[in-house]
Amino acid sequence: MPDAALPARVLLATDLSARSDRALDRAVQLARQWQAGLVALHVLEAALPDQVLAWVAREGQDDAAVVARRQLLQDIGPQSLDLSVQVAPPGDVARMACDVARGQGCGLLVVGVARNEALGRFLLGSTAERLARLSSEPMLVVRERCRAPYGRIVVATDFSPASAHAVRTAARLFPGQELLLFHASGNPLPSDRHGDDASARQSAAHEEAQEEFTRFVAGLGLPDPVRVGTRVQPGSLEGALTRHVRENASDLVVIGNRGRGGLLGTLLGSTAERMLDWLPCDTLLVRAP
Image 1 (cartoon, rainbow, N blue to C red):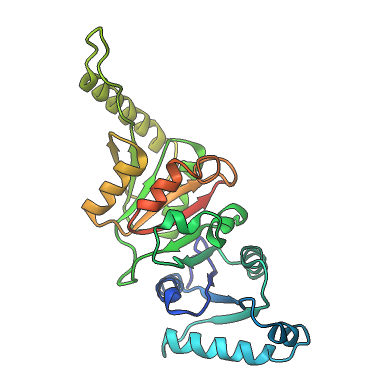
Image 2 (image 1 turned 90 degrees about the vertical axis):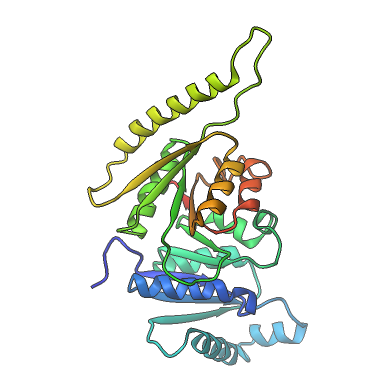
């Protein structure tokens, strides 16, 4: 019996190319894990004028859907899955994906990295970046191969309400998994001419962050079965978090997103861009309500 707290449907935005295979495999894995339906959206790329005209005249529309569904079923394999395939004409992929997700009641959007470039450069000005701004549902950006369910999950936090919502969402989507809440305390300033000790200030900042972590976790209101750990690291968020992910082979990083403000809004082009650029694992963007 599916858990009512889990998504009833997962939306996969795919161009049906080999570069989307990792996102497809992860979307299938999550849909099966959650006993959810999978909605696969394929938006036709702008093509030759006669092909566009044929679509407008509804000539070849059914053929395109049949081909897309056949390829998806072949990629998914013989195991049963509640699959719905939608093929749309060329257009605003991000807007179409949001409309389909809303209309189909999808609780998660899944996209892949489109090119062999760093994730930050891929997101900026792209469909995924627009989706992060437009979608009210969590969005999963897949970079790694799907070898197993997510095990090592890290939630980046700055103790804000958006971070708290990201933690609660991760706890809801991955029940039974321990969550590591990660905070970067920043770099201490160099010692000043009065002999101020930088290491002492770093230690004080670390203790202050630990105390704030205690208050933050207590205010989350998580149910007893949910297990959380905390980690405070000195340095910038993008550098400290990326180093932690690599050293600990983390599977997934969860980031709170305030839409046009906050981590993925006002900081696009600076901290968040560099962090997404460097993260070597999958990333779940959770928009605050």
